[in-house]
Length: 471
Image (cartoon, rainbow, N blue to C red; front, side, top):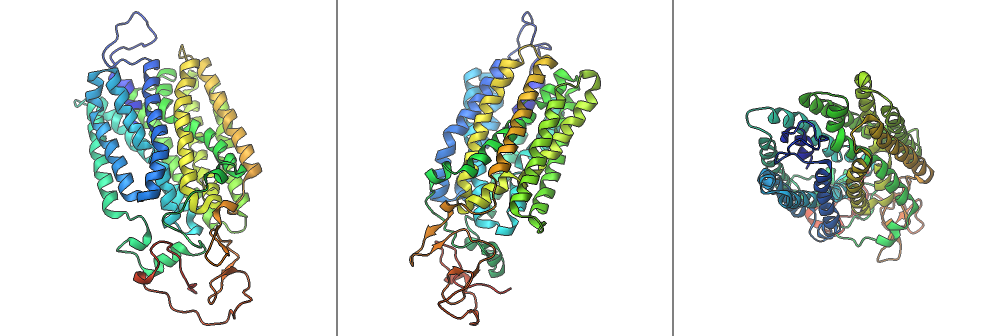
């Protein structure tokens, strides 16, 4: 999906798109046309977000995400042909790229719910959400070199399509919807994954109304909107800003976007590990600290970036580098808050963040289209200020509402009338009555712990453990 945003700068033949008298080539797209292409992709994601959520709930991630990947592969490989066919063909292929993109965040939520130990949510989220950075790290320099090679810009799409198809075949071969169904899973690994989680059903109805009216979820979404707008700007318009405003060469623009993304990825992994390993701070304090580093610092440097002239373009590059490094801490912020508060419904909450990303795909091109009409630094400055205000304001709201405790909608009634679901870390499960209580009055806690059941004897619908594990 990202590769087109870079190949724009090497597809066309017109050196100055602001000159109305210059003759347009077949691949010389105006900012208005580029915005239409991005909007088509956003429409595809918006249309697909809720259906993918339903498909995931009914069929799991293995087949559904594989199909989404094949859609992406075909659309990417067909894009050079669609560019030759004309405007509406390009709209169609970008729409289907957007459809496939609608499957991403909900898949992350499902993997976290079923595969991540409760104490490793930060690490899992940091790895799984790094796909945005890895794609840019790979795409920008590769597309830049292919554009200027004898193979031409079309080869960038063919290479990406081939890699996409290969990766999704690997996904289908290795992934299973739940750890219980994976042939390589051991009892020890299963216990680690399910410890302190309570009952995690493979198919559980989502309390949509309760989630959508929860103030913590709204704080997460507002914070996510600021961060995703920033991220979309770097990906969609980073190369354009570096080339047209700061006068960096095409190949340099690719590397100067990819290198900050690589550092962002490094800080994202570090923040995920630190968020899980730090024990002397509460989850809320940790999330507020990480979210503030990610959003407020990046917001401040966005405000600074708008006032750096072309003569000091290396300072502008340093500001972009600082923004990317600081936003790497976001996994310990609102992303982790979403999974800790929503627990078994994390996939739905993350799919709503995907929906917000679609909205940002609409707003970001519209923002640049309406403001940057002449492509001057003064116009770009307004865009930078808007992003800075969104980032800082979103963090203030998040820090006010953030919590590490599971929401009320994560609890579901069991057959004996008790409540289970997301379980507080301080609670312990009684080995006799199997109730979640700090102290059990129905039986003796000193009774010996029975041996764990073999995998074949476990309930494949709830994936819950009838007895605790000591080790």
